[in-house]
Image (tube, rainbow, N blue to C red; front, side):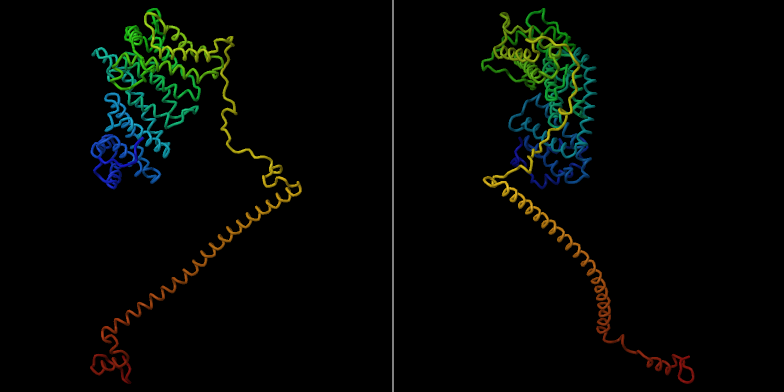
Length: 516
């Protein structure tokens, strides 16, 4: 979990971060823009996570709906950032306290979840394009993997594998945290399940890296299907093939799964059994399945972790589907049962370690209980569709008793007449309060409307008065201007001016003293 406290290694203020976030969003069309900002301002993994969180907080769709296109581009950039960090985990691990790549992935997942909740349509559009890119990339890697294998002898290089990278696989794991996996059909989860099924069933196993990636893909399929009780035969078949690789004896190495028909599987199967039998489990615990390159190159540790993970996934999926297939559990898990029979965990030549023997025992008991081997086989029948009761949402509304028979604690010890009278009195009191409340609301509404009408009338009269005041002020201004000029504008007015001009012969007059 990323700490909300500001790191001391950041040398800029929060204001610069927030302002630069707005600038970045306008130019964030490529992944390089985000990487450049992180490389410039972040010195640790927490700083990178803090930058991503502030970009989302300052440009969220909830703040402004016009940010939809910008945040959609930022969503896609975060997906590519997630893949890059996941690939770095495979090559260099977590990176210690400074980098903290696992914490970066957790922080990006939280931001992706928030953005998905803010705008599900944008998130679905970005994920749809990304799944199409994964599909095309997988098809290309299937075509190119064979030629790359012939050109080099390195079997543990992830770049030569037809399986997806660790970052891609971790990103597909995030789908279960962003979208519901229990829906019957989903625009994102259903294509992801189909893509994982195609990878598991068609991609060949050519190295230990391929075996680890295939086991993790099967685990993802089981994770997406166990709650909805979907049947994923690709995952069941792959896990059975993984267990069959550790079979005891050359006669048990025939694997019916197409993914395990490669030359590497045929040659490595005896070696895997010998590596597992010679592995020392002092702490009585199996090593976890790791995606780091250092753990995958350790063949002994990787072999034990792959077998333990395959047994664990088989046990989980067997328990989740138990009793939901209509007596078809035997047919569904027949390959897993045959693979377990081929293990011979206590063989004298190459016995399995005690933790693996215990895991085989628990898986076998879960398989026996799910397949009901102690009961007679019933004829197969078509799987029934879920009923209306199963599909309907569970109602969480409380069940109310009959109000006529409901009695409060205050009514204890009273007679029936007194209880009825008190109940009626309480009902009238509630009705009286409700009527009073409605009257207060109506009075407030009427007063508000009266104030609005009065304000409209007074505003019109006020406007007329302001107009008159403005005219009077303009006239007063003209009078003040005449006074400032010393009365020059007021001289020479009246008929006297005409008579003076007449005397000076500048204005003619008719006989009789009238103007012409």
